[in-house]
Length: 99
Image (cartoon, rainbow, N blue to C red; front, side, top):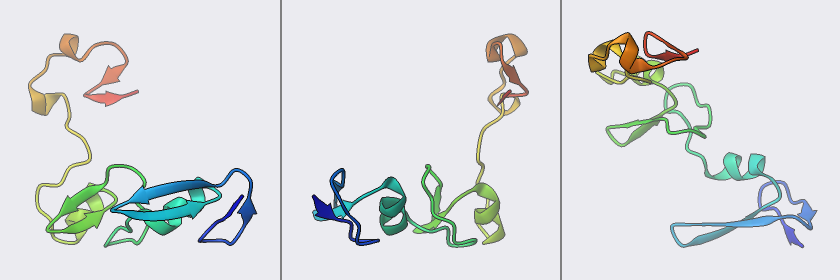
């Protein structure tokens, strides 16, 4: 068993994460995210997906990046901007967005 470095829980199913040469021990993904995930520079939420990095700053979405003055940030590219026809988009999509 190992003690979680965030909450102090000594849990038999704890796990290690090694990043940038540093070893961390956690009892849950929640604690690992709390400790390791970057925070959005605009709203402060933890970024557990891809997010957006601009000018060495992290954002959770294009809206937050745009609000902070980043031009051209998008969360997704629509089929129309890729010049695809509806047939090329395939079933289950509408305007390039998954249904």
